Image (cartoon, rainbow over all chains, first blue to last red; front, side, top):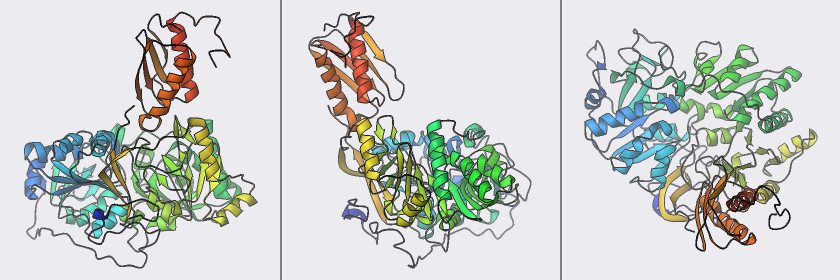
Amino acid sequence: MKNAVGRDIPDYLLVDGKEVYQGKQYMDGKYIQKVGPRTRRYEKPQETKVVASLVDALKLCGARDGMTFSFHHALRNGDFVANMVMKAAIEEMGLKDLTIAATSLGDANDPIADYIEQGKVIGIQTSGIRGRMGEVVSAGKLKTPAIIRSHGGRPRAIEAGEVHIDIAFVAAPTSDCVGNCRGIGGKSNCGSLGYAITDSRFADYVVVVTDCLVDFPNFPASVEAIDVDAVVVVDSIGNPKKIASAAARISQNPRDLMMAENVAKIIASTPYFKDGFVFQTGVGGPSLAANLFLEKYMDERNIRMGLAVGGICKPMVELLKKGKVRAAVDVQDFDLDAVNSINQTPGHFEMSASQYANPANKGAFVNKLDFVVLAALEIDTDFNVNVLTGSDGVLRGAPGGHPDTAAGSKVCIIVTPLIRGRMATVCEKVVTVTTPGDCVDVLVTDYGIAVNPLRPDLVECLDKAGIPHVSIESLKEKAYSLVGRPDDLQWEDQVVAVLEARDGTILDVVRKVKPLEL
Amino acid sequence: MEICKTAAAGTLESSDCLVTVEPGNGISLELSSSVMNQYGRQIKATVLETLERLGVENAAVTVVDKGALDCTLKARVECAVFRSCDASAENIPWGGAVR
């Protein structure tokens, strides 16, 4: 059945009330029945919840074949915990038919690809999927299609019981002996633990894995002892160098800076650019650089940003310290400046993934966004964006908060070079729709700017400010004139991943790629 | 043109390609590309056209493509062929066989 972005969704996926994507805000006003976890009572006071090993923790939680384990990705590409847990479960305990429900997975999780190939891991639910795991899933080796959700779609699915977490594993930079966790104060700090919070509240069992046991009580705690069954102390939960970079460097690339300047100009041309505006930017080169140019306009008009949302990094922390931003709410930290600032700098707060982006709660922070600046792997002439599959059709990305912030914001700006190598970023049809075009408002490339015709108000803003813009079709033609018109990818029938829209409907599917034979 | 000895041109940098030509019987092409699924057919056609334009009838050609544009592919093939018969130092037929 064709959905609202023109993608054909196989009927066999449309069972148990699953629907195809119908357009943004389709679920508004409908009801959600939240499920509760079945958790063990600890009435008798416990001195400590620390157990000797991961296997002991798994046994305590009744780990068995067919269970779903969850992980968060606050340690990003430095994470050791997911691999450690899966190794203990599969190699030491001999468990099989496991499903991994992670907030995201990266290259750091490459070893898990082996468990998929061996058929020990049969399900993956995640936002991001990259590296070898992306390759084996794309090759059709996972027994069930992977389910890809945005950062807001995941807590929605957990709360609705669409994914039931048997055991949540919380990698914690610090924990006390009963499981109060924080992202700071240890040797592998990640700052915000926002992605772990929903899991800790909705999983049947919660195991904290830390490499720094601190005095009780470890407060204010991100994950609280009242939800935790066991604490395991390991040598190291991750590689600090890969958890948070020293500082995300602002691009010196003139092309990036030109695009960033145009982004700031566009923002300043709209009526939403006023004192107290709410802003989020990604950490890609041009998106990050937009912060600098925006500061100039803020100074000129003598206005302050009310709130910065999202993944937080150094430029935003600096604005906060200078008093140019009143507050920052933070689901994830990208560099050490942000890690060292959360709950330290006045106004820098932690939030959960649900608070950040869940479309089924009573008002996530993304709904207050005036502007979001995002990148794209591909964007097509309907303004649909792909940030999941490479142009070769292989899974190697993450929707992350992209669809959530795009849908919630008043102005969603995509900034991307027109071509990358031989790949046309602006194209006729994206490989996979991860953010529907009805949520995307402006495209900024190094060859020109295009405004979504659904937003005549923004067209008027740009015209008034004298910012030139063209049709997205002309940008696509320009790209193809440089790199040539690509051949269509060839696919097998087998669906290897289902891409859920943030509201739980099906936005697209990824099929197994048929390699080109010359 | 006659391929006298093995010669190569290009790099493995992104947006470039490494072209190697060796003496052979007829034309054989081994192609790998980071954009194979979308541009493999066009890359093959470009390489074969360029060889034909240079009058190369016997060569074993290997192309490791990293997303090079057509103009780059052509230039690398031309250069490798000219190097293979020691003709790359002077008197290159700009505007003739090399365009």
